[in-house]
Image (cartoon, rainbow, N blue to C red):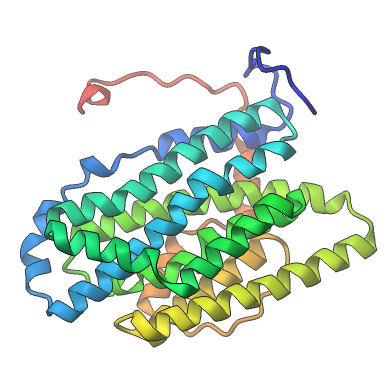
Length: 309
């Protein structure tokens, strides 16, 4: 449905309660990178060998590149397929939070790295062939793909293309505040994925059987292509390549299952997988929570600590 740009949004006229519930989840989950005390991790960071510091920095810089793409290209490309007016507001919030996710890398580097080290990590990410190929392919989907293809690849980028890059940090429990930053990002990714998967499934149900089969084949092929390139990147650069690949596979499976498709990768149990899984959202449970939510409850009493900045 098309809306005039000057049409006011009436949140008392909700076409889909999933929009309202997701908005509330996003605003409740709101955070800023500058409020996470990364400086408290300086001692733990300095205790790491130089090669591990470099590997973690490169992985974080490459994840930042994916987040920048999502904020500048990925999310805006989804605006052509909004079903409700409130959906625009949800996408606005996702766009902003993706910018926060991208900026978080700079905040970490500012406290833990020298200026030269930070520049080197970003330069490394900008010049990685596997990353460049992934960004190019994602851009092609955003420019020429169908609305459902765009949603599927956005979700893949929120999971399989970043979870492996976070693995080395998640394995180092001494970096308490860096871990907190990554957990904040993953929680946001989980909400974005649950919301857009729901919207994907609405559109998917409108397709003919033949079109559904064709789309499933397209998604499975693209997922395997993206994951193969991501695995090459992780094998060459991650500290624990096997664990990083496992996290990538978990992310790909989560993306597929969220879309209502069958998983295709073998994932081995681990503490990191348990930690990532804890941050994810089960699509069916999310839908149940939406249905159980009170559509009239839209007011929250302010407290004094709401003004602590």
